[in-house]
Amino acid sequence: MRLPAASAIRGGRSIGSIMSPSLYTLIEASFPEDRSRVALEAPGRSHGPLIWSFARLASTAARYAAFFAGLGLVKGDRIVLQVEKSPEALCVYLACLRGGFVFLPLNTAYRTDEIDYLVGDAEPALVICDPSMEEALREITARRGTPHLLTLDANARGSFMDGAEKVRDALPAAVCAAGDLAAILYTSGTTGKPKGAMLSHGNLAANGIALRDVWRFTEDDVLLHALPIFHAHGLFVACHCALLSGAKMIWQQKFERADVIRELPRATVFMGVPTFYTRLLSGEDFNRDLVRHMRLFTSGSAPLLAETFEEFRARTGHAILERYGMTETGMNTSNPYDGERRPGTVGFPLAGTQVRVVSDEGAVLEAGEIGGLQVQGPNVFTGYWRMPEKSAEEFTADGWFKTGDVAMIDVDGYVHLVGRAKDLIISGGFNVYPKEIEELVDDMPEVLESAIVGVPHADFGEAGVAVVVLRPGQMLDEATLLARLKERVANFKVPKRAFFVESLPRNTMGKVQKNLLRGDYKDACR
Image: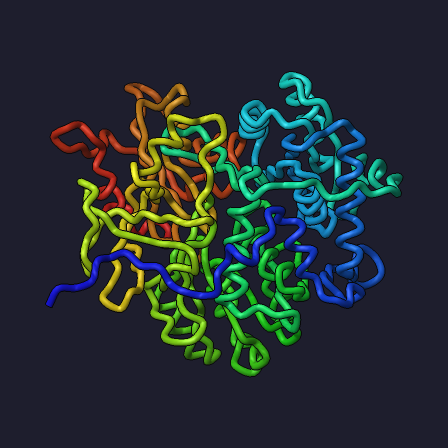
């Protein structure tokens, strides 16, 4: 019997007919009729929890947008934000959408070398940072010609708040077309240089609506939000689902197991990376009774082990819903809300999104065959910031985006991620690109060459291991090598272990055989 071609599009209500060109306009129109309802509840700074109504979110976003305009910013200007998670940080994002500015969040773990490159590449008109980074950022922004640098801390203090709190008038929301740029998210590449994925209002709106609908979000939901908001998972997936449905968020600055256990009985939805779930399962206090009011758990940003899926289901009666996305595309697929959620798969294409599996020659493969995964839809980004040639390389002649992932679509239509064409390591839900770290290791005077590979890790799912060849007569120990890296890059990028060898295994073409290294060191982080 001939199987259907491995290309699919799932139905659902049309997103084109319900989308406003401006994502901000769409979000505010989705707020409940009673805007005094609680939109966000955050840990208190001194006297109990902070309560933000939908009306307060809207008015604060309007005030911040007016403040940005008062600084001289115009539509299309980039605003970099590197601060700890707070309601005010979320309002900076909403203000960017409202004012037509381009939001550019940076991981709070990034070091000055990383920030220097990103500020130089993005050329923002404004950088907002934590006060602890002000001195370092002052030197970078001065050298890069950035007009404005302001500070904001997790307690809503700093020069940004001093200025924004004085603004009383609000400007009308900017008129934005679906194709207008809304955000740039940087993702490191195999060349070692980060690339800025350009996401439009239409990209983010289409994906947000598709997720809201497929996961059945309503204003009666309560989302327990423990993800960072400098990442697409926490900002675009989690926040958009809540904002576009008028749902409440219980806002936690970061994942702390005890805090999540305490708040779960008040929630209906929880989103996490696999590490969150392994940590929840580590204690007997996480049980069926604790989550009896929950309707949905989702997992993403890294593969969920089948063992975790099964243990979670046995413990709680809930099947974790796994999905698949990328910085460049948002979410592409999801296991079904109703129906079988198959462990080891990422489900079906979302409404409006098409996926296909192709051979190395570009032929569309049949169900059950393994090849390169490509996607197409209104969620797919517009290209890389100031990299037209690289952008063109990532798309096929007929407009499909090459994900770089290796996949198979089974006869029932479920997408299986088999591997990664690139050597991406996903550690604790964050992407680590080996080439970036290899370049730093190779720059060390004692090092001849290195290879970074991902190996299994009980807590993070996957972790990097450095395999290093030293120059003749040179000495370097593991602790020193790792300490140097921690000074240069975010901690999640630093390998957990380093090993020193006489040579790296190579094939007949001279390419390092990383598959052999992954096998040799598979137990290094267990």
